Image (tube, rainbow, N blue to C red; front, side, top):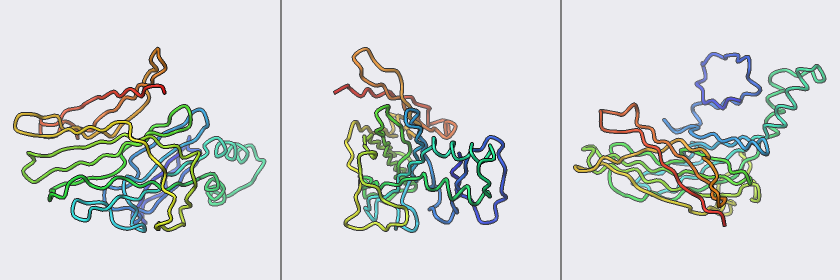
Length: 253
């Protein structure tokens, strides 16, 4: 499956192993704010994704100046049903055009409303990024959501990256269709904070780490779950940034 933001004149490419494809116009997203995350629930055959920041149709993205909380659309695709539908078409049981097949696949998509925290700073930044950088599916159907706020001033010293790891349970929550507009009555997903941490860049310390990768690690003997995170150093930018791994243990309740 591919979920791609594309320009209007982008050529169409065929993928031999592609089971289904969803295309989004690049105009739906703010620059550098498209789909950053992807998670697969192998137990229920669900594929999860979410835009990194607010879509254009839903308002402005969060900045230190506007203090807004990003309002996002979490999407769940029933991968099992999509594969079943495609297999029927390939076996000749159904004769569908590619457009009809895409419409059928869209029936297996469910959306939910997710609201991020507000920016933690009101200082002026040279570079500022606030969004969901990754998702991770848990065996019980719940999701881990990594909210990431990166602040980089012009002089670079004083830069920080603040991360918060939340747990949500969308399968037991109210749905929110893509066509619906956000309002004061929007059923945003309830979220539970599991961990938060902050890294930075100073004259004496270079711990700045922009975490954008996350997966499940091993389970411990007491049943606790290890989560592994990976940062993006932009190829160890300017010889200053480093690649970091981080582990978090979710204790069994």
